[in-house]
Image 1 (cartoon, rainbow, N blue to C red):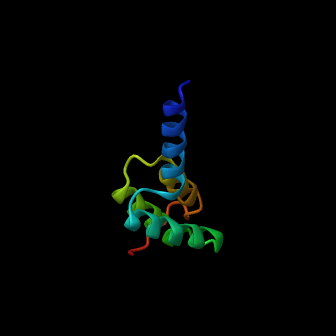
Image 2: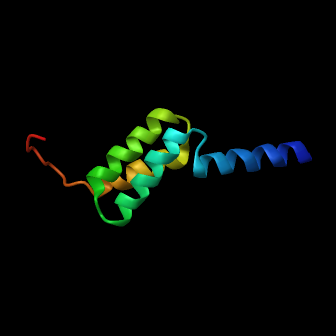
Length: 79
């Protein structure tokens, strides 16, 4: 690998973790706080919004699916 390829890979990895847009980062950070507090619905909504701003960010998608697993199953209440 060339030095340029290594730098590009490092930049892509950094962007996946922290994000490329301020809005995406804001929603991701809030989602992480909600996830830590077991507020799965709020976390899912925040990660979903983060994905709206950064649809190609795999880390955001992974966290959204993680929060989704904590949501109650077969909840038919009107929200």
